[in-house]
Amino acid sequence: MNETHFPHLRDGNDKVALVEGETRYTYGQVNQHINRFATGLLRGESDLKEERVAFYLPASLDYVTTMHGIWRAGGIAIPLNVASAIAELDHYLTCASVTRLIASEKYHAELTPLCTQLNIELLSVADVLAEKAGELPAIASDRRAMMLFTSGTTNKPKGVVSTHKTIRAQITTLVTAWEWTGDDAIPLFLPLHHIHGIINILSCGLWSGATVHLFTKFDIPRITAEIVADTYNVFMAVPTIYVKLIQYFEGIDKDEVARICAGFGRMRLNISGSAACPVKLFKQWQELTGQVLLERYGMTEIGMGLSNPYNGERRAGYVGQPLPGVSAQLFDENDKPITEENTAGEIRIKGDNVFLEYWDNPKATQESFKDGWFCTGDVGIVEDGYYRIMGRSSVDIIKSGGYKLSALEIEGVLLTHESVAEVAVIGVEDETWGESVTAIIGLKQGASLDYPELKAWCEGKMSSYKIPKQIKIVDALPRNAMGKVTKPALKSLL
Image (tube, rainbow, N blue to C red; front, side, top):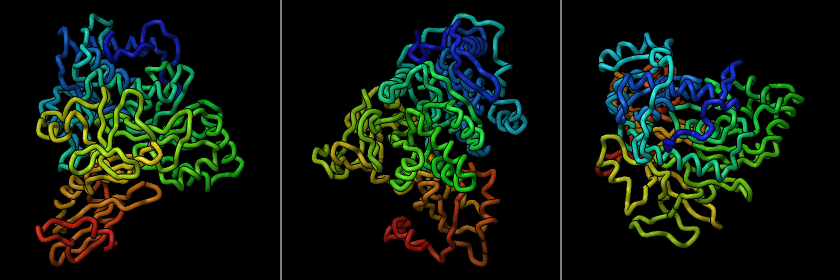
C-alpha cells in the first residue's frame, strides 16, 4: 500500500466519508472516484513521475478526488487558493512548472488566458475521469507528493515540497495525539490550499474513517444549526472564526445562543490554530461553552510541531509540547541549544513531519536547516514544560486571520500604485484578526490617496485577506543609517 493510500479509502467501505451539501459520499465511492481519476491522469503511462499537477477547486468531492488521484498516479499535487488573484496564480504555476491545471468549469473562462499564455492544459475533473480504474503505480515513500506555497521573508511565496512519508507523519502524529476515531465528524470551512485545512481536518478525518462535512465558506447559520443538532463532535478553526461566532451571538436571540453554546459544549474537542489565540478569547470561549480550547503550533514546512495535550492541562497563551515523533529545541543567536527554562530562543524542529525542500530553491532550503534542525523563524520560551510563542524573528511576517502573510510581497504590489512613493507594511495587534495588515505610505509629490480608493485598487491585484485593513499617510518612513526602514518604529506613527 502506498504511503498516502488512506486505510479507510477502499472499495466496499459504506461508511460516509464526505458530506457536500445534501449529498453524502461513502469511502468506497470516493475511492472509486480517485482510482478512475488517477487512471485518467496517467493517459496510458505507468507513472506521472512527479509531474506537477495544480488544482483550483473549492472544498468538494472533486477536490478530494483530484488530490488523492494525483498522489496515486505519482504526481505532485499543488492545491491553489480559489481566492487568488491572476498575478498570484501566474507566480505559482510558473514557479512549479505546472503542466496541467484542474479547475471547476465555472472558473475556466477567467483561467483560460493565463493557461494559454503559460502553455498549461486546463481541465475539469470530468475531463480526466476514466470510465473504469486501471493499474496504478507503486509509490515509494520518499517520492515528492505535495507542494504548498507559503509567504516567507522573500518577496515571492516559496513552494514547500512534502514527500508521501512527510504527509503520513504529519497526519498520524495528530491522529495519535488528538485521539481521532471513525466516530468523529467535523465541519471543514477553512481554505484548502493551507496546511490547517488539508492536513489537520481533511486528511486526519479521512485517515481515521471519520466524516468530513465540506463548506465552501464559513456559513455561520448553517454550521451553528448543525452544531445544535449534534452533527459534529470536533471543531477546528482559526481565532478569527471564534471571534466571529462571539460577535454573531451578540445579534441573535439569547435562547438560540444558549442552544449553540450547549452544542459546542457537548463536543469532545475544540481546537484553535494558525495564529495565536488571545488569552481573552480563550477565556471567553470557555465561559460560553465550557470548552477549553486546545491550541497548537505548526507551519507549512512542518505540519504541526507542538500541541497542548488532549488529556491534561491546556494552558491559555501556550502551544504545548512536542507532538509524538517530533523533536523541538530552542536555540540562541549563536546556534547553541537553550536548556534552561524562561529563556527565549528560536524554535527548531526535527522529525519525519518536516518538509523535503523549497521547490527549485536550494539556497533557501539550505539556509532553513542547521545541523539537521529546521529553523522556524519563530521565537519561543519554555515555561513549566510548555512552549509559548513570543513572535517572529522576522518583522516581515504577519499572521492575520490564520494566514501567514509576507509584508514584502504586499509592499511590492502597493509600490506599483501611481501615487505611492514608499510603503511599509506591518501587522498591528487586532482582536478579530490576530494581526491587522496595515500600510504606512509616503506619497509622491502632489498626490493624494484615501483608504477606500486604495482598497478598490487592490482588488484583483492580491487576495482579499492580503489587502490592508487600514493605512496611514506619512511625510517619510523612518530609516536607519543604512537607509533601511525601521519597522519597529512604525507603530508609534499610528
